[in-house]
Length: 371
Image (cartoon, rainbow, N blue to C red; front, side):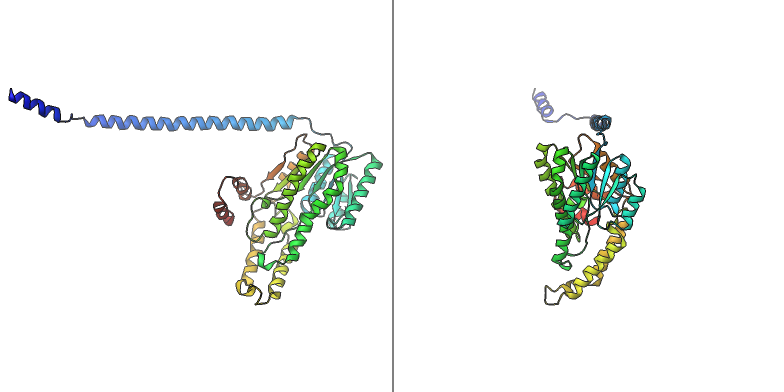
């Protein structure tokens, strides 16, 4: 009896032996479940993406099927039509059927002559320096008189005139900040204030040219970025104020189109070089030690970067022109149009703009420095 009791105690304390095949089967089935869960989640994500893709394109299709605004009897006013975006947009909207008032800094220059020669008598060249109050007022009177004589209404104002300056903050004087701001920002404000009464009457629209650099702020671009960020703030406030009058306001944010515009052409680069070299030479050693911090190589690096960026820009303006031309006749234009421009598959500048809302500034700074 004692033998059986001892055997019973031993059998109770000894753990059961689990065969190794049990663990193998457990691992196999666990792996199968994990693979199935991964495939299931992947299928769900693909299906969700397909649905969202379909909804997005259905929305685009529906918008494109909407009846577009009739351009008959409608005129638009565009600033900065000597070269670049303004010049090409004047020709594009002329082909659309709009009567175009093209504001040119030099009405006798090559750009104005091209507009005259290629138009179908619907382009009016208007002498306009957006920093000059008298010229703005003269332009307004000319538009008023021409519209009255021809039974037209001013449908849209496109504030496009602008310039760019690059360089280290310490090597750019205050007068350059004021110069760029007076054209890019206060020129937009000045012209808009003058033409608002006509646009209220027609319940038309205003399109202000901003930039992707109104959203991301790379080094050496403080002057240009400040002016365009100001345009965005002005436009947002203007849109809210004008909504009760039926006037729609859109912001155009072009990506990298430097190759196709005059904003990075050789005269601009030469002017930037002269500006920085003059400021460098005129800065005494005792004033903030500018000459001790910066050197000719720094200036050359800024200019080389400008020249190098030209090659990566979109070779022509057609994507941007298509967006702007479509927005002019869209019954419900968007508040913002960020238009990527690159000769590659993706415009990294526009991608950064879209990511800025979601990523910390420290990460955006690193990515911006790489572009």
